[in-house]
Image 1 (cartoon, rainbow, N blue to C red):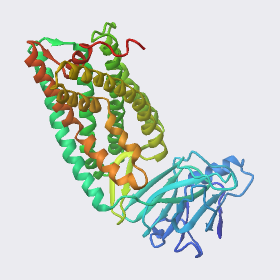
Image 2: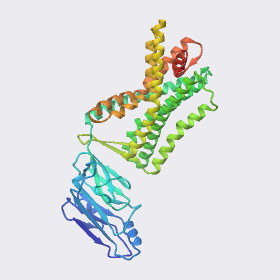
Image 3: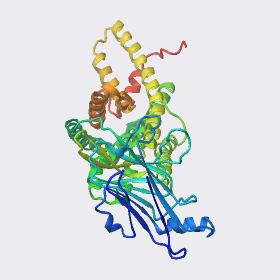
Image 4: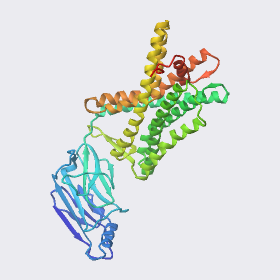
Length: 458
C-alpha cells in the first residue's frame, strides 16, 4: 500500500506529512504536523528533503514523495521482531541523505512490550540488513519517534526484555548501596594517601603507590558518574545527558585501562624483584591510563553515539540512563576493550597465583602455617586490582543471565569497599613490620619476591 504526493509549486516547497490510523488504512496528507496527533502512525517529510531532491534531479522532474507500507515483510537473519510487522519505505526519485531537518516517523500509543530501536535498510540483499545508522530513537511514554537523515526502508525493531521489574529494582538497590560505599571508602583511601604525602611520610616504592592511587581515582570517578547518571537523565536535557554519558564511559574505560596498567606494573615488579628503574615511569603509565580512553570516547562522541538509553522490563517499566545509544558500538567497544584487558590481567593473575601456591607449599615445609590467611587477602586484593570480577559479564547469557547479573553487580559495585579493606589490611601489616609506611601492593610484592623465583628454571 502506498501514497504519492507532488508539489504544486516547483520553487516554493512545503513540508508534507502522511498520517494513518492502522497499517492497512488509507493515508491522510497534511501540511500541518499538528493535525497528525489523532493518527497512530505518521511520516513527515521536511522542506529540505524536497529541495535536495529537486536540486539532485537538476529541476528535470516534478518534486514528489511516495510513502509505501509493507506488512509482514520477510524477516532478517536474526528473525527480529518488528513493530506492527510494518516496514515503511520513502521514495523521492533520487538519493536524499545528510538532512539537517530530519525525516520524522512517529508511532503513538504503542502497546507492544520491548525495547524499540529505529532502523533502516538500503534495500540490498535478499533479506533486510537493519542498521541504526542515520536514525535516532526517541521514546516518550508510549510514543516512539524516529528521526532519520536519509530516505530508504524504515522499521522499528523491538527487543524483548529479559529481566523482571523485581530483579531490576533489586539490582538497582544493590548497585546504589555498593557504589555509595565504594565512593566513601575510595575517598578515605585517597585521603589517607594524600595526608601521608602532606606529612612527608616515607613511602616505600612510590611508583607502586602512584599506580594504585590512580586506579582508585578512576574507580571513584566511575562510581560518582553512575550515582549521578539517572538524575541527569531525568532532567530530559539532551546535551546534559550526552555529557553525562561521555564522562561515565570515559571513567569506565579509564578503570579498565588502569586494571591493565596495574597488571603490567605487577609483572614488572616481579621481574625486577620489586625495583622499577624506568625513567619517568609514572608519567608514562599515566599517559597510557588517562589518554588512551579519551581517544576512544572522542571518536564515539564525534559519531554521535551518546544519549538517552531506555531499559524496559517485562511489565513495560522504563528506566532511562545516559549511555551509548548504539548497542553494536556498546558491545564492540566495551566488551572488546575489556576482553583484551581481561586476557592480560587474567594471565598475570594466574602467574601470581601459581607463585603464591609455591610460597604456600614452602611455608608448609617450614612450619609457617599462618600464611594461608594472608594469602587469602592477597588473592582477593589481586582480583579487585586486576578487574577479574568484571568477567562475570561474559556469563550473562541464557539461564545464567540473571544470576550473573547479581554476582556481577555485588562484586563490582562493592569493589571500592573490597579494595579499601585490602589496602587498609596491608597498610596495618606494613606498619607493624617496620617503621616505614608501605602500600598494599608493595607489601604483596615484598612477600612474593622474598622467596626464590619458581619460574627461574623455565
